Image (cartoon, rainbow over all chains, first blue to last red):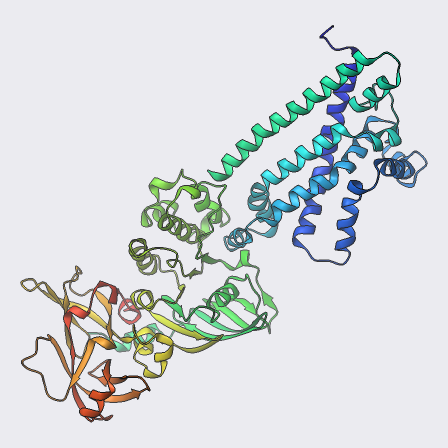
Length: 231
Length: 382
């Protein structure tokens, strides 16, 4: 058995990483904002927002993918606007795959960060205010460093969820090799072909190794962050 | 001797002017007092609203009406629509639980507030504060590795370096054991005397109040029941339920006038008389405040010449508070107010009445280091 990766495997692996990284990076700021709103503010429609954020966790991924297609497709209201104003096409591109992954990962990111915001000692923030720091400065210099472990957990969960994303992605951006065919989609294609057990097994091994590597790396970073916080 | 004319003028100036109404859930707070600077103790039992009141001063809670002025600057004024946010108040706050930032080193905790003050407006140099609080060896450490006393010293330094107009200290010593407490006390005294920051100090420990405070504000059930100089407040019999029966006693402002090396005693003058106490290592002329616990004072109708007691003062009975228990408190004017706690049995046997002449005896050994505070508004301002 040949140990070097085939071009299709390399493309799928690189795409998976690219899509997962993009999904987490783009959804993180929104995740922090929404988590902060849910943890700290009371406002009308809070329950609705909470439900909306959790929706991707509950509805079948195909539903999310289809809704994205309707909204963000070339002729969809949002997709048309994006194309007219920015010249950006999301449907059937890797960007669309990242959007689908990001939305599927969003509830996990928000939950982890919200929990850590709720556990921050608000007395520390009050102390910072009395020392002359305004609310924004307090958030950046006190709250954000203190919730770093929660943000990290959210990123790991989000990254893992993105690597495994299948249903919403294939519905929204289809299964185009080199463009939207991430590892799970590639595996799906291989499984559809007869007598491709060896090829399927290779993709399975790549997926497992990638997931383990991500987990290990996150563990190392988490330990560093905890050490810095504890001093 | 104390020059009273000069002193009266000095204390006319109002540094802190508070008149606030606020509501915390079911709890109503209504507080009104002014202080001439120095160290003001907010004294009262737990749950009477002391912390709520300092939170109002810091801007961490909002009054429904009234005003808060520090050195003439309005921090809050409902009528004028002024409500400065905490970060604009320049009110330092030392919390009971120190609240050091766990992710920053001691050094960066200290500079957190300082860096937000324009250099021209900084009142205390970093090195000066580090020296005063003896923090030099801790700068690289993380808060998690500090002892309780060290944490509070860092918290005090951090608040001080933000150049506050007013420093709030909410029971900063209550989480510490007696040894640590005695370690921090001198720092607070130096802060008060050398840094000249007006301080509001929350406490429910009379020892601390007498030792540290110039002005005392007694809070009970969300209301200020009395405020004034510690000596005056402590000599009021009607405040006994607030100041605590066991620990209560008059407070005398005094200066060191000499030492009796042979007998290991120090002689103090409180204006109207002299008091011998166990040796205090203080220079002649040092101003201090002595609390004479009521339970350490006994009374007799004639001068007890063959007594072992060193301090005997002739005085007039001003008032008697005769309660239901076995004891009665007798306020005697010996040139300064002194309170004696005697049994009701003795009160009746000696037939003591207001206006009567008595001799008050104070055992020198009853006055220990814990009942002596350095300084005192009148004497220090002079």
